[in-house]
Amino acid sequence: MAQQPMMTYFLPPSIQFGAGAIRNLGEHVVAFKGQKPFVVTDEGVTKAGILSKAIEPLAAAQIEYAVFDAIQPNPIDLSVLKGVDAYRAEGCDLVIAVGGGSVMDAAKAIRILTTHEPPLEPYYVDVGGVDRITGNLPALICVPTTAGTGSEVSQGAVITDTSGRTTEGPRKRAIVTPYNMSSLSLLDAELTVGMPPGLTAATGMDAVTHGIEAYVATRYHPIAEGVALQALKILGKNIRQVYHHGDDIEARAEMLIASSMAAFSFQKGLGAVHSLAHQLSPEANIPHGIANAILLPHVMTFNLPHAVDGYADIAAALGVDTSGMSKKEAAHAAIDEVNSLNKELGMPAGLGAAGLKRERIPKIAKDAMLDHCYKFNPRPCTEADMRRLYEAAF
Ligand SMILES: [Fe+2]
Image 1 (cartoon, rainbow, N blue to C red):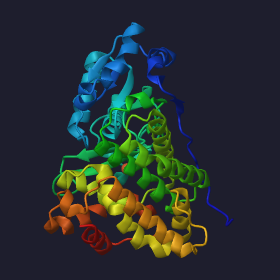
Image 2: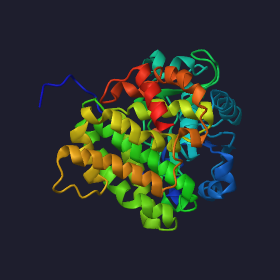
Image 3: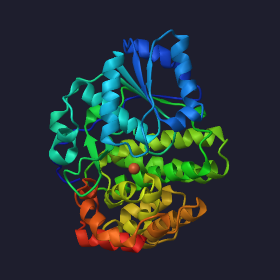
């Protein structure tokens, strides 16, 4: 091993994993000395009856709480500010996020602004926000209701900046800090069994993208590499099963833990898929997981000469029988496997079919260069590469 520069690695928070874990929520609030939790969620979670499962244990433990459910998919900065106002008005002292990535990311941003001066602008990673965020934060308990984003263990929170300060129109920006990892995550597969197949597939492919991008990302992080590969093994074994048989609680549980693992692993870095995908939700309303799934095989093809060994490992992890293959053949097989997953999971054939207008490609290719994720891509990318990748995936 070559001599490496000094690195600091952050390990995931406490995770309680098991069907029914949500029933202990009240005890955890007490353990964190919370007097009044602020429960962040969205209408979808409320309507699906999942929120009531999360707040029953609070009521049973006679813990007073406030619910804030005004979070939309791809959460915007304005809802974060509203959330902070509500947190203060209710006199809360702990944050609980019950939902998917959008809810957890919004909850993380709300939590930061409870102790850091608003607005969000100075805390985004692209303006050096990591140095402005301290650990002086209320406890955060994350309860994911989808399996994919892994926001419960990640250091990132992706928020749509509507200010127009950095680009024409809204843009997704990230707040990244080790303090963003939850204080505790409750992984309860019972909360994910009701997810419809389309959402199961999209969020599952987000997790697959995390594992693949992290494994070949350029940062030196052997802990994350090992976790990424194991996450891909579990995802490869279970993603088709949960899509076709959503009531398989064991497969749901496997997807849930693997999505946390894949998200932990992207401490190593992500890649061009995420920089490209981050433009597609504000631009064309394409859900994050679907944008990733469509772009992933195209970026892998672009990266191939720089990631042959990594992709060969990934093929085997995803369950491809690579015995007798050369490294190069196995690397190609990883791309084939992603294409076959996309097909079986009903992903749209291209970005055009998913709603992107072709004439917008030059604009979003430019914006993709403002995103931080591609900086760890195994093959360096220029704006022209971003344009070509959008075209290829169109
Ligand atoms: Fe993602």
